[in-house]
Image 1 (tube, rainbow, N blue to C red):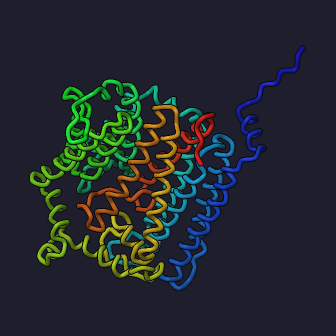
Image 2 (tube, helix red, strand yellow):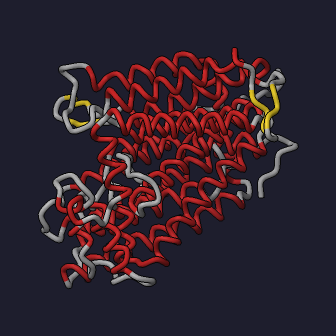
Image 3 (cartoon, helix red, strand yellow):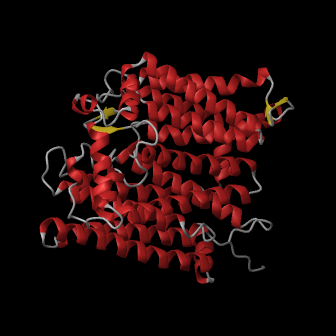
Length: 458
């Protein structure tokens, strides 16, 4: 009888761990640095605002650090070739967001929520656990391709859920659901489902969409019969803007589809058409919908005294700009500014809050973190030989980049402000869970890409 042994999955994973893993070693070093920075930021916020350090909060935050390190172990076991920068960047952004949310909560100022930091920490922990679970269970991300249309249907159902009477969570925008006292924004998960659907759908239909069209002024435009998918997504986005009163999510979903469509076809005409439809739709909505018109008025005439004094006018936007100006180049220091003077400073206006206390240098550092995160995701997509993985990594990375642009552009008066959350930073459990799931998918794709013999990512 010949001695034949069959390794279990865990045995194979343990054998990989014993081998040198320079990528994971690099990730571990960056993680330790990110954890040290985030704990230091929370301690500085306590010293600045309270004059003393509350060790209990730091211990609670350390639990999140332990979970992140556990995620690192999962990557060593199940995805040893995954990108080493993604998790440390997500950890650092999440930690900085928690430090500022906590700092605003302990200020005791009107409009701030003292319990927001605790909830943020809980959601962050759940997000990290979900990320690790998805990395462990999703051995091959191509499995998602089989369920392209199921994910598309799921995304649409999630967007419709807030309209169900017994689930509606209230609010100015119809985007929340209330399940046994827990409020959740299903649109955050819907964008992941739709990203998977867009990637799978375009892989299946790319040949018809890339057929030769007319060339005008250097742009190759598709034939008229190929406009169907783009118009359908545009109409869905307009329905979201009109019915849900959610300008941000509508623009985000449409922008994600246009970007994925461009990568799939290589036609710049799609981008131009998409921009025209998005801008045209937003302008048309500003004439029809009062809340959209209010956003445009606050953007164009922010410093008009009458508009500033009008309830729901430009008071919030202008205060955020004043806060950024007060921070100057180096900031007032954590815990030493007055970012709580701006309404909704823990969520929509988290960037001005950080900008006031960390200064222009701090904001640039945060934007650089986003830039590296998105660049790694796009590079993973470009290096992949699998069309589905390439489009999915691109869609998810571009979605995060567009969300950051929309929020930072809105609070700095570059574009009209919309109701989105700044990824990882802003208070919001739904967004945090969705972003950590995006991290898991990108990690899975990057691990598969690096194991391909012809694909090399530096």
